[in-house]
Picture 1 (cartoon, helix red, strand yellow):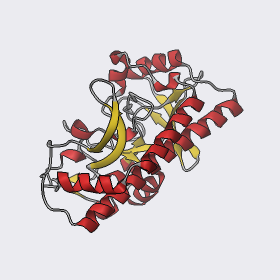
Picture 2 (cartoon, rainbow, N blue to C red):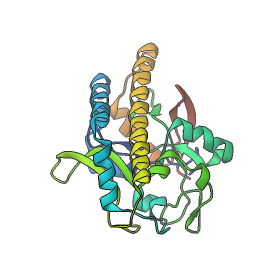
Picture 3 (cartoon, rainbow, N blue to C red):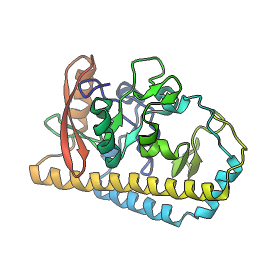
Length: 270
């Protein structure tokens, strides 16, 4: 997808859900009846994210390293994790965007799930995602066969995947920590991982999760001030109306938050 193509949207299901594992797309959002996070006041969302970041720092790296040892994940180059069908989109931190722009700017697109739409019909999303190929699996733009064309320059999430360290609701809605994505659905397991490598993986994953939370907090703080300064407000009815018109072929404008400012993109269904 290019910046002029439809932008998928991640449905956040709790105050502590993160963007990198979202699967829902805009059409699903309109039909699923999911309560939108934008209905929760921004200050409360910021407080919740700060609290979640504090919980992350309290999580024992030693415990995480032990879980990594017990799982013993080893990549078998199946490339499932490099497809949206299996793993949703790849949300990019600012440093990832800056690096990828030097390689192939056309591989970037506004991330799924713009968090806000103002009364004028302008959408706002917290960052960029990697473009997917137009194939049934939604393969990553940089996937060639089962190998990554930019492996030595791959984004942060790709460096730590399948490891993660954030809380998600289970089937009963209870929040609990998740450390591995797609357990038993790809790769090989119960392989030996040296202790120094386990410690490094744990540290890198915690740093990544902190960066994601910090980015989202920064975005919300920016939007709060930007909306106040310009007399804007989120209007859910405008959001839904513009989405329906978008699905019928009308272009929309999406403002993408990057490096402390907004970058404008026009998106339409091809």
